[in-house]
Length: 245
Image 1 (tube, one colour):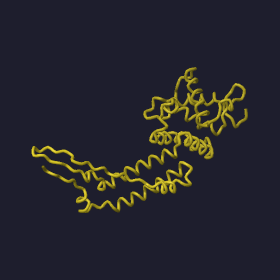
Image 2 (cartoon, rainbow, N blue to C red):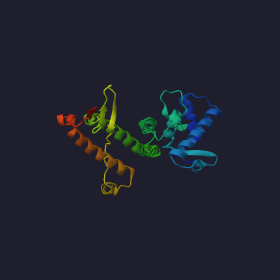
Image 3 (cartoon, rainbow, N blue to C red):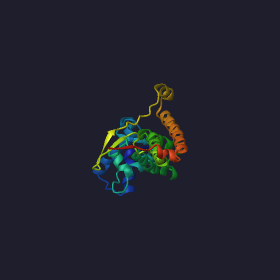
Image 4 (cartoon, rainbow, N blue to C red):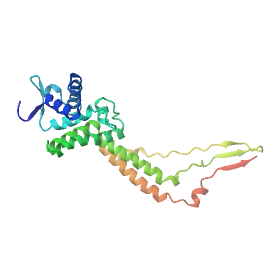
């Protein structure tokens, strides 16, 4: 084994020393399982690719990052530690909020290895990029920003929300009861197929679709805000007809 490699057993020893967990078969079995998760689910490599004889060996620059992650992966007593749940398969990676929060937690032990002078920035960037891909972090982050933008749109255009049904015919009876003589149907706005085709033409990547969605939201928000000044016409047009028998 070259000087640029570290055995998995050595990493396990360091993790046990860091965490204070018992140096027994149970702890080492947990660490082996979590090492397999890191290598196969994050690094996207087979464990067999890291074997030299009976040992699993890790590049020296990757070893401190793996050590830090494993230490958090077995520390299930730390409140708010999502890394434990991730290693145990208990994180919903379809939930954008959870993915973003998990990525933020994973960033600290990875970058700490560089700050302590144990690895280099290239290795750190490779690990962060790998985890971003596994979690689809970039799209999760964009999804959250889009949700916030929709909430902002809803809040800023409340005055344009028409809760009065236009065109309903309500019949009032002598006893004070009422019933609908005619119920209006609000037309749904549709984009033409030609316009939709023009918008979608040339979009292939997730980023492309999010960029266009953001652009449309920005333009619609600006347009809606410009039209969201309440006028007397707004209230005159929001009426219903009462017919009394």
